[in-house]
Image 1: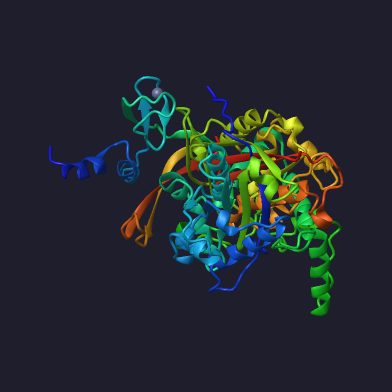
Image 2 (image 1 turned 120 degrees about the vertical axis):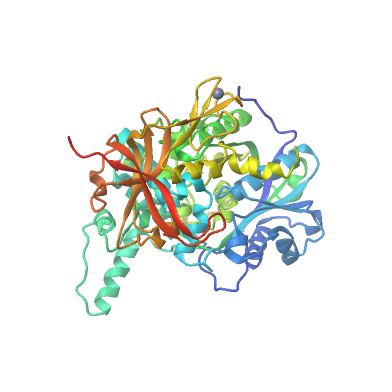
Length: 423
Length: 156
Ligand SMILES: [Zn+2]
């Protein structure tokens, strides 16, 4: 049934950049934040490049419409970075917007129509308060059943989590372990929204209490801190605050070029060797609640195109809008069998120094989840890690030759997977 | 047939949203059933998701089922905040598997939301409906709205 697709010609990433993620003041526009990512992307191109070479802009964005009352973001960004009259397209696939924009850029370049496509994503979310951000994100679900039921974006993943717990015995502590790992990684990433590990946060909270003349709080360890409902309130049980990605602003930017011209930009391009994408029904209409079928299909397509399997992947960015999402992502990608990813989580196998590092940049949890920017944000991290430019969070092992990004839209109704190779 | 009559035809089509929500207002839960393969779908679909068949019946669900997955929400959806739910008053919702084998997302009533860890997947539930007043939004007029819910059956 599944077609085996292949790229028409080779495609490479030659530059990648990220804006600082976090809350920019009201009045800062998405296109302004994109400029920050674009400048960093240009700086990453070793041999420099001429913006005139850009054939098109493929931009991921969930909803500048609702967040900023701005539609037609593509030309707004092109205007700000000075590439008018190049064609622009905005991609909306919920949280997978820029992962999809990137994949489409790869398809366009591999087709031979374009040689250089600027791709990336942006979201300016913090103009709205929590209730309204919740409303915008929930708009990616089914209005007749899911929204009518009172489901929220955290709620729908929490629903998936209880199914996983019931089927496999997964515990809330397993989710917490994923959050602890990602916060630690984020603390080493200057672009991250959260600049603190859970341990750092505990120390800060204790110091703040002392300063106010209050009794010094003491938690035996990170787990006890995360079980403290004051520090880590429930958002949608079993997802607590530190299980949820952050609402923030940010942009990411990647330059995709044809393989045969990649050396004009850099001697160290990162090659795109596989890509896959799939859609799925709303949650209740799926056969399984504990796995995202779209992820399995997209991964199967990407692995087949790349001629590799899950056992070959050395580093991955796994979509952790919620900690449960990272856990099932690890299973859907085939890194672990269903129900067995918790073993790796408990043994720390996915830490920076582990066998298979996951979300070395802090993930959406700690780096932040400016929706439209997240997909290509993951690609920025794989690019940096493969080029050994990730600074203090650079993975120590030297074999990071194959990397994967797993980018989920909404509750798995879109999933896009991209696979990268260092040669 | 004049094209204008298409408007009411779409509005009344039992496989589209408006008719599904009208049935909810009448306290009925409808599913589509593919005449070719028997596949059930909620909300009803004009094309069978399983076999692409377009010969579709609309059938009423009996209302029995069990909890397949759930959550207890503290940071509520705007719809629920309007009903007074939120950080001080949590609510339960999730996926219910009906006795007919099809699943649906709905509100879950009759559980202790202060002890979410004690709610059990597999708990039998019975169809119920919630009626509340809501302000207008782009797809609804202001007024009473009806929502699908399931209530946990009393312990035997
Ligand atoms: Zn059928």
